[in-house]
Amino acid sequence: MARLHNKWWTLIAVCTAIFMLLLDITIVNVALPSIQRSLHSTFSDLQWVVDAYALTLAAFMLTAGVIGDMFGRREMFAIGLGIFSVSSFVCGVSVDSLMLNLARAVQGVGGAIMFATSLALIAEAFQGRERGTAFGIYGAVVGGAVAIGPLLGGAITSLVGWRWIFFVNLPIGILAIALTLAKVQESRDPSGRRIDWFGFVTFSGALFLLVLALVRADTDGWGSPAILALSAGAAALMGAFFIGEVRQRDAMLDLSLFRRPAMVGVSISAFALSSSIFAMFLYMTLFIQDDLGYGPFAAGLRFLPISMLSFVVAPVAGKLTGRVQARTMLGTGLLLVAAGCVLMAYLSAASGWTALLPGFIVAGVGIGLANPVLASSAVAVVRPERSGMASGANSTFRQVGIATGIAALGTIFASQLRQKVAGDLAATPAGRAAAQQHGKSLATALVSGQVRTRIARWPASQAHAVLGAYRAAFASSMDHLFLVAAGVAFVGSALSFALVRQRDFVAFHPPAPDAGDAAVRVGA
Image 1 (cartoon, rainbow, N blue to C red):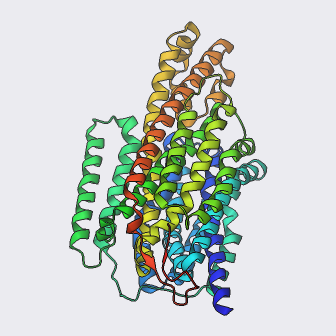
Image 2 (cartoon, rainbow, N blue to C red):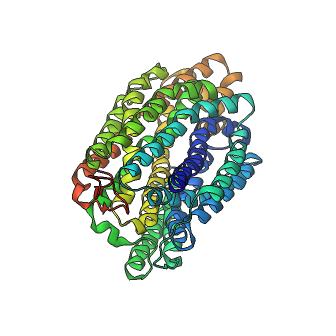
Image 3 (cartoon, rainbow, N blue to C red):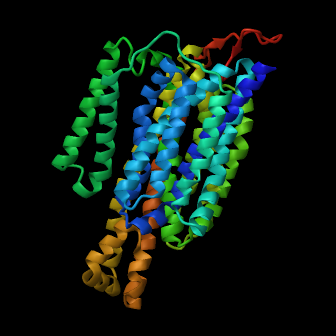
């Protein structure tokens, strides 16, 4: 009984911490417009609120997984919780965008440690069919955080202010740390690995330069010397990383893992899911709040269809992992995400939030199908003792997808929004007058997302012309983003069907199997 007790307490501790971590991500999305107004942030600042977190999360993920394998996953998990909780407090007391983004970067470090060790702790604690059940519960927690995050974030932001979306992490973090230290059993990789500092530095540097280039490309121009230099630097560092990993005895990322096509397919699926629909959450939030004028709580309510469906479908998908092939569920999930994005790509200046509803429903089912399968498949294609690196690699691809997806989509969005507004204003006398008299103020308003506030004191004809041009441009730009996201998800779906082969999954033999369960193919 004690063993059963411990493994279920492990699941509770891990799910509590991951719930906090994912809740923070979804809460932040809804609060971004309020943060923008409070700290006078630009559109680029808003991108960094998400990307600073995603970048450090991705950069530290693989190293954190190795450290957990070496020194103990339970201990590192508790340390990650502490870092995340303290940095959350700093986020809450931030006085400007720079302080907030730096604190978010530190949050990413704590999140990386938690992510890199969480799936490995579950995989180590559960065997056989119970592992599928545990991952199903894990997927339900992920879906639950996504489900209530926008609504809770909207409520907190509306009632007590955006700073409290970070303060709520403190009591949850303290509870999760106490649970981890009291109930979770320690586990590690007995092979005794060393930290690959060369790999860590080159990988982190490459990611930072790549995202910086994507964020600045709209301002500086794709062909500018600065962007070309950043892109070349990112390519050179990434090349050095791969060469170093081949030569390292204790590589941060064991490239031999990717000899199995299934590992390649699962990694691509994780990247595609994050860089498509999850990256779009930032822009959907801006559409609902900045363009349509809804408050944070009202916006959170309108995200319920997609979030609740992913929550309901996730545990069902987790249970199906023992019966349906992983590639079928991954490929179908991403295909539904692609279809959902296409359904949302028909916005106009007259569109309300209900124009997103069909896409919300279809994409929500797709997210619910894919998420738990990604979690279980990441550790099912390697030996159990390598689960730390495998789960770290999977989470890294997720975060790289979010960071690069938001940055790339943001460049497209900002460029098209500015060009479309300028073109529409030039077509009417009132629009031309507004552009001539308030050109600088309008440019600032477009960058900051505060068009409605800026035009409130302008002549009625000019304000009407600008608002009409802004709404039309916003809708048109969103249409393009949805189509790009749909293309990414579709490619991910096709590669999932092609690469995630069931014969690549590792059969695991539990120490005391039940009848008929002597060799379970995990993640099937």
